Length: 145
Image (cartoon, rainbow, N blue to C red; front, side, top):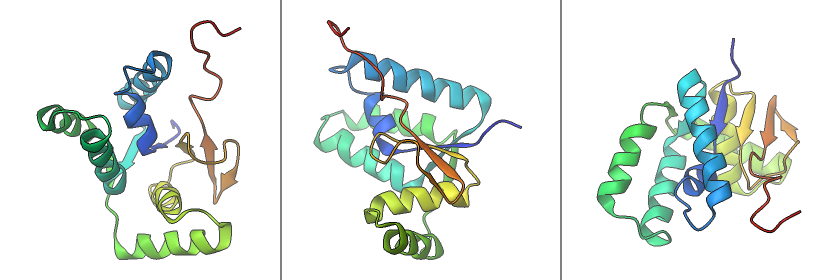
C-alpha cells in the first residue's frame, strides 16, 4: 500500500509562486504525484490558510482560488474538529510546537499519514509515527552551484 502523505499549506502556496519557479515546479510535481496515486491528504485548516494567503499576500483572484479549491477537494480532506484541536493542544504542550503546526501534525496523525510534507517544521523529525519531510529543501535557484 502506498504511503499516505499530508500536505501543509506552504506546499499549496509554492504551487502558486511564480516568483520562485524552482520551488513552484517542485510543489506542482509533488501535488500531481500525490493526486495521481491517491495518497495526498489535506485539512480544512490547510485550505483556509491557503485561501487567506492567496487573497492577502499573493493577491490571487477569488475565481482562481475557487478553481484551486475545486481541485484540492479531490484530495482526502480532514475536518478540523474539537477532538482534533485537543490533540493539537497536547502536541503543542508536549512537543513545544506552534499551535497551528501542531494542528497540522495532529491532522496528519488522524488521517493515518506517515509523511508530512512541510517547509515550516523540522525536516527528518518523526512525531507520533509521522515523518516531516521538506520537499523543497535542496533546491537550487539559477546561478547556484
